[in-house]
Image (cartoon, rainbow, N blue to C red; front, side, top):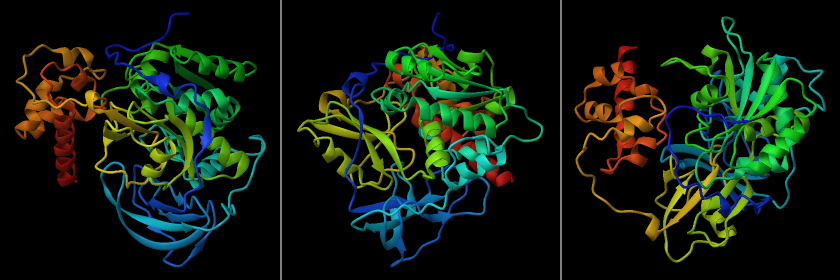
Length: 441
């Protein structure tokens, strides 16, 4: 069967071989964790602990009454040293709870264990997902319980799991699919029940044959779940790209997957849902690829949320002498780091280290109107035109030309022969439009 795909997109070097065959292993338990209290899209959280408090592994340490939020849990048992401001991997200044680890962990999550979904209705599943603090683990960190809370005027017929992992270098979703396929399927079935969706699909790029085989075996006896093979192309894992490739449905501009009857989640998110339901385990740890040619021993690790990324780098053998840039996430959508004294969060799926010859210093040259960015854009936007509007503070034009539809995938910047930082300007343009909307409201 021909691999499915979407229109446009690019084909960067994927560099998955560095870690794709490295099994997941537990990182060292940290002596101290720094847990940011903003690890989701939505309302800020309020700390439920104070300096000097004793906390257990999995204990809720921050929450909010808002619907669009996800609580935070202690990733070690220990003593709260302080609550202070820190810089998160995205460069944001946020409050964080600092916990000094005790000698041993004691799990106290407050979540019940359920071996089967039979005794749980959709509302109960959504409550467990919410209380476990589960968010999208592909990087967006949107609260999962919100995604599967379907409004009365909407109806969902598919839950799609994103196993594309199209971002170069990263292999954590690949390893989870190879090593934990049954957990992914259990989590998918829970998400389907929560969203009242009758069918499930797992989309995997064809450069992951082991994962495809593993997941096909896991769904062999499921009559309403299937695995679809996708073409290896970036950004195949974007929600709208997945829906177009697999179902041929087009999410309208400014719309959501719900508008075409679909909910999209990440495969690692589904595994976390399974852990919460079956084991009563909140999201206090996740898997991560420590990779790149600037790392001595690339690894796929399972680490506690709040672990210093410098410690994870050391566990992967440390930096090579010619290491030049550290990125949290992948090279297309990740964030470059000033230093390694940064805590890993729920959305941190990778630490990528590039060497000097891979980091190009350049000065952008003028646009030559080649339209390569237009041909690459998976959202069918005109990046150069939008950049001109952003540079000239033409907010009405930015909105009219759909700058908010930009998913910041980086495809335009990747193909630009003039080396113009298009995504940088597009982000500024989006910020201008959002500021205008806030003023109007």
